[in-house]
Image (cartoon, rainbow, N blue to C red):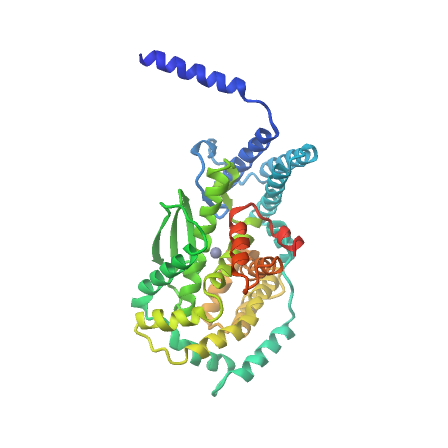
Length: 436
Ligand SMILES: [Zn+2]
C-alpha cells in the first residue's frame, strides 16, 4: 500500500507541475524568490543585512562562503533582477502586481547601495539615504539649533547651564535599576491593551523580553516569524520613565512586533508573497518600520495620556515620587525640537565634516547628552550610519501622511484605519511623500 501511495503522490506532483502556467503572478513570484535568495547570500557576509527571515531554509545559500566579499557578483545579480522587474512592469497591466514589482525594485536599489557601503565605497550622507531609504532628510543649520537652545534657556528655570537645569528636571525620573524590568513589562502590556482596542492581532502571537547590555542600540525587536518576537532593551544607560513607554511600545505594540506580524499575516500567509519573509534592514521598509513604531506611541498615548499613565501607574510601581512630572513632560516636548540635531551630527560626521571628538561635542551641546550617552549615540551612527533618519524623519513622514489624508487627532477612526493600512501593506517612503 505504501508504494501505491508514493506512486499516486508522484503522479499528483507531475500533474501539478504540468498544470502550472506561466502567468504574470508566477513570473513575479519567481523574481521575488530570487530577491530573497540574493539577500540571504549577501547576509552571509554582511551580518546586519537581514533583520528577519522566516521563510523556507531551501532559499538559504548552499555554496560555501568565499573569502572575499563578492561585491561585483552581488551587484551584477542585483542589476539583473532590477532589469527583470523593469521589463515586467513594462508589460503588466495589473496594478497589484505592478505595485509589488515597484516595491521589490526600491528594495533592490537599497541592496545596491548597501553592497557598496559594505565594500567601504562610501557615498555622501544624502546619497546614502536616497539609495537606502529613497528619501533625503531635511537639513538644519547650526544656527537653527542655537535658536532652539536659546528657547530652552528661557524656558528652564533655576541656576546653572542649560544642561544642568535640564538634568535637574529630568534626572528625578530615572527608573531605579531594580525596577526597570517590571516597569518596562507593565508599559508593554499597557501598549498591547491599547493597541488591541484598534488592531486585530493573531491569537497565538507572543514575545519574549530580555534586558541586555553592551549594545549600540537602546532596544531591538528580533522578529522570529509565526507571530513571535524577541524584544531586548539595553540597560547600559539609565532609563527615564517616559523612555520606558517609548522603547517598550516602539519594539512591541503597535511598533515592530505588530508591524512584522501584520505583514506576515496579510502578505506572507494570505497572499504567499515570499519577499515578506525576509526583512532587509537597510531598505525603504525600515523607514516605514521606524517611523510607524515612533508615531505608534502617540497613537496609543495621545495628548497627555503618556504623562497620565506615568503618573498614575509607572511611577508608583517604581516607587518614585510624581512631583514635577508635568514639567518633565513639558521639557521633553521642548527638547524634541533638537531631535534633528542627531541627524545633523550623523550627516556631518559621515561626510567627514566633523571629527569624532567634534561629533561628541555637538551631541553633548545640541542633544543635551552627557559624554557617555554622546559616545553611545555616535557608536550607533558608526554602526548603522544614516539609518538614524528613519526615527525622526520616518515618524514625520508617517504622521504627515496620516494627518493629510484625514487621520487627524480628532478623527481617531480614520487615524487607526490609515495607520493599520501602513502596517499591513508594501508601502514605500516615496509613496508617503507623493500622496501628501
Ligand atoms: Zn526600531
